[in-house]
Length: 96
Image 1: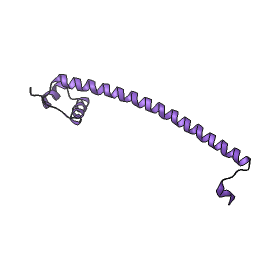
Image 2: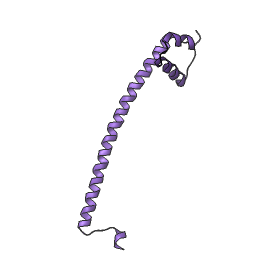
Image 3: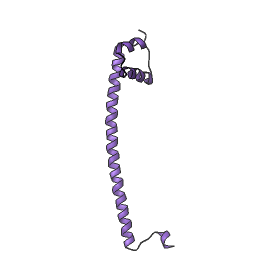
């Protein structure tokens, strides 16, 4: 069997056909590749998918932490503005 190289798009297309219900044997014959290659691609895709999910969870947690920090900073700014207002301080534009 002559060695062929498939792009990531082609591999994704083949794996999508597998997910749509075609058998490994049919795909191997159709694309003239070994069954082992299909199983290897499938395993790699599953591993990459799990890694991507973990990465997205970490990003989401960091995003939530940053949102909380932003909300806290906004509250502090608002409290400081109110304190300045109570002490008679105003913006330069307000004094003109």
